[in-house]
Image 1 (cartoon, rainbow, N blue to C red):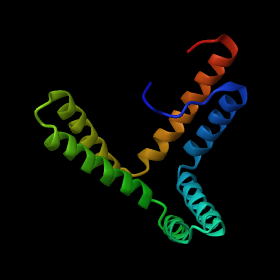
Image 2: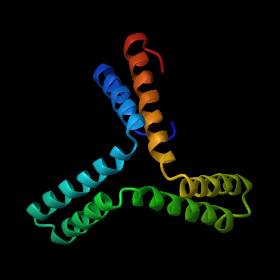
Image 3: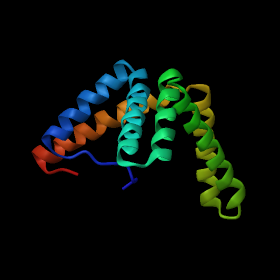
Image 4: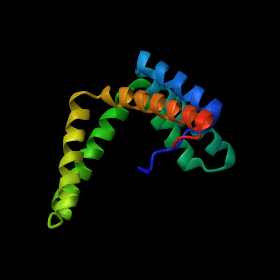
Length: 141
């Protein structure tokens, strides 16, 4: 519906809830997992022969491991730029202007409180896990 990845099934629901609780308990772990993911993908890309993307991915992974909050700031900058593009690029259409203002406010909030992204992702995992369990047991949603 909103373009978010779905979690389905019994195992997916349970894992979604467990990982959501882990992310809420230790929100910084999410950024380290993304850094490890970049490193693994970079190594696999180099092994497959894609040297430039592999090296870039390894460098980004190392930077994320050293400065874990940089991901949150990059998302905040992206939201601010996207909000400005929606406001000024499509300013004649009021719906896009409204979405641009909301996106701009979200980007500013992320820049002020960068850990909010990790908490929101943890809450998303818990809600998606509960919905997956409800869908599995009762056929809802």
